[in-house]
Image 1 (tube, helix red, strand yellow):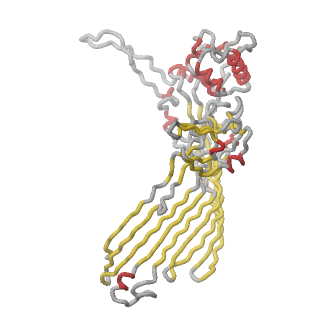
Image 2 (cartoon, one colour):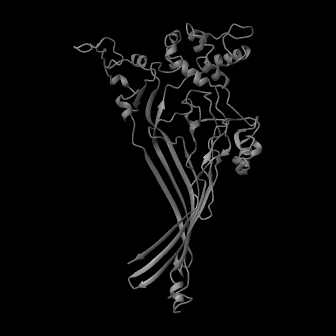
Image 3 (cartoon, one colour):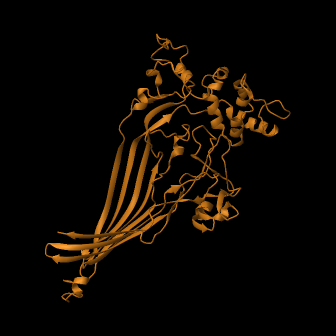
Amino acid sequence: MSNALGTGTTNPGLIQTAADNAPKGVLAAGGLALTTPTFKIPITDAENFAINAGNGLWLFDPNLRVPYVQQWSFGIEREIADNTAIEIRYVGNHAVKIFRAIDYNEVNIFENGFLQEFLNAQKNLAINGGSSFAPGKAGTTPLPILSALFKGVSNSSGFGSTTFISNLQNNNVGAMASTLAFNPTYINTRKSLAPNFFVANPNAAFARTLTNASFSNYNSLQAEIRRRMSRGLMLQANYTFSKAMTDSEGSQSTLESYRTIRNIALDRHVADFNQTHRFVGNFIYELPFGSGRRWLSGVPVLSKVAEGWSVGGIFAWQTGPPIGIFSNRSTFNSSNAGNNPAQLVSGSLEDFRKNAGIFKTSSGVYFFNPNMLNIITNANGQFTESTVKPGLLDAPAPGQFGNFPINSINGPSFWQADFSVSKRTKMYESAEVEFKATFYNAFNHANFTFGSPIFDSASFGRISGQRGSPRIIHFILGVNF
């Protein structure tokens, strides 16, 4: 809601502050004369943009409504033995009309011919030896769009710009187009082009609308077996096979850019929170010793020592969260760096799935088979860098998205076993002493987390973190009345 009120750089044409932050003059006894800046409300989007190139627009879809969730389930339950039942059920839900903000000022590189200009500039850069992409040298290609934008601009902001040269070397056509569309350096030269040459609204750094554009759905098969406490034993175990799909992981501000508003269906993917398989089991067993039990009942001293013992445990196992492999390149527009899938070259998705797991080596732990990686170590054999071997993955070409499916591989799985041992000893009818020892993560199992998903990062495939805690042992001694 605050975005629509005109705070910060959003719709600031509705709120203006008059100030002189750089006063000039000599302070005398009568004070310093300040000229009050012109105060005008509202101002146009062009005036707004001229004040601050980061200013933009935010509004609500006039048909905006509250999101809602549809839920359904059915199942069957049957007793299979005394005090033991099994249940199988289907559970599903569908979240409808989830909030999502859309930026309609997506940078255009297609209909205006800028993509081809970018490709020609890449060729010029190679011919010029990597120091400039200016036309003129034998073999170079004219660049009419860039020449118009760079007219009267310094070489460091034009054909010799290190930022633009880096954009060309890394296929970042979207980032380059965004700089040219919004940077104040080119505010005057942009007037030589059509007003909406790069974006729908050239007088706004963004033009966002809050809509009901997103969704999620969940489908699962669940099975459970339960045994009520009988003869000192109680147990329960359940298994879930599920799949969650969405086009938005959500955020506090609901601002999550689409890969492109040209085709919003591209964002449909397995949700980050999806758990394909999950199993949880627990039990409690009261040992049959001591007073009123099968063994050692009524035996002086021994029955007191043996009575009230019980053991319990919880075991959980689940597949890891889904992961994808991405490129940190803005090859399509300015907002897809980091969520632009990598490009499969000679490898396939199945190759990466087959080579995913936990691989422990002398230089560290890896999620992908070290045979697929170039691992560099220092003189002491310590890890310094890991990258995917050439020929398996690459950055997408300018004007394209990568083809590595989003969230198509399950990350490292999680499992943990917790156990407890307790003893209750009656002191007299209304009081007992209780001792309990609980072992969390009893086997001290390390549950790893996947590292950087960027294929050309300096630590690709390496695991450097884990979730959960190491083994913890907790003791309790108390008196219950």
